[in-house]
Image 1: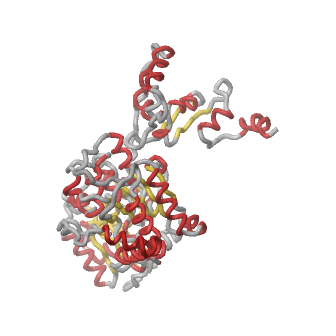
Image 2: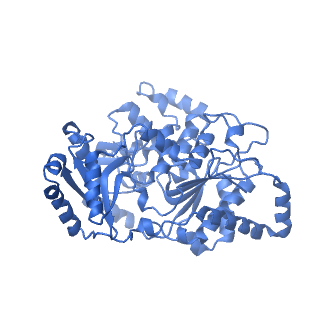
Image 3: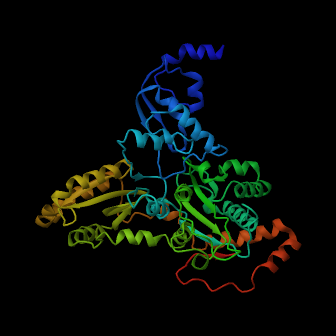
Length: 492
């Protein structure tokens, strides 16, 4: 009866949102036509998603060819190729219908007209820059304001010593990761995110599902179901996290170098996995590994690049900043002097993702962005670019005001009057207390050390005295000297 009623009333509903399996069940392309059909997460959908194309006069296919694509697990490719040869003669791009290509890739090949969205709001810049390097040639514009995020540092590399791999499981690495996550949940800094919601956690295995299952079993045996649900804890592989996100992500590399240096891992399939895995964390990303990047991995290996990025994320940030001139101008300095003399707290060259704001005045939990127009960095020919940048930042909640150089140097008091009026209107008072959340919640520098120490205590507690003694015996008595370029690499 419900199915019959559904069939009768569906034409009265203008918008439907459902998985592809439900589309097949509920709509007949012979009788149902939509003005627009949108296929989201098309990178993960195989050619079976073609059924949705029959339903639309116009089709919008949303995806990313740099992310994980269908893998045709369990399919006999020889049989598939024979079926293509038998039933699809004369069909354009028929060789693509093999189950290993996504509907997004098929649309790119068939239609063109691709529009690339480059604004990124999920991750703080220090996290997303790895994907920006390996997959997007620095075209992504990170727009998340990291100053509002209280978890620091944003990336951590943690090395597990003396581990071994059994198939697709590295048990020592799994136990280390599980204990680190459990220890982090206990710390007050991880209680709430910047939106005031419980901090969410995720675990991504870069080698199969088995490692994720091992970690999930460990966590479920030591964390209560209520806490598991409260923090939306999820363990899986990169494909399972595609389209999802967590505040804090722990990534397990799984691999070890028991038999010497590892072979180069730089293939397209692995790049897609690494891209997805390294772009799921909003606030903080841990890389838990059992490798010495300098000795076990070649320079172009994705694993080495990821570890080194976690050790020093500012390296990529500095590479971008070398292309920019950050020198503060005389105009900006004069405006800043007047604001500071009036008692306001002013920050020059405030970075918001890939953008910069000339001056930002903070106070009483509020901010005002001030642009110094007419300066050599804001000539008339750059006006459209500046307006586009301001429009993007205003969508993020920034409030702007402007001061023109010609007016300022003619009569500074008159030029600054609208600025001070705007500050009063926003109730940003002089000498305002540093009450904004980013300054209040900034954790002490020992947060990571506390997490690591507590994780060691938890592993001892979980394993029992005998196993703990065996584990200590297996570990090398003297750790190898740290690489001077590595600032955050930890040894279990």
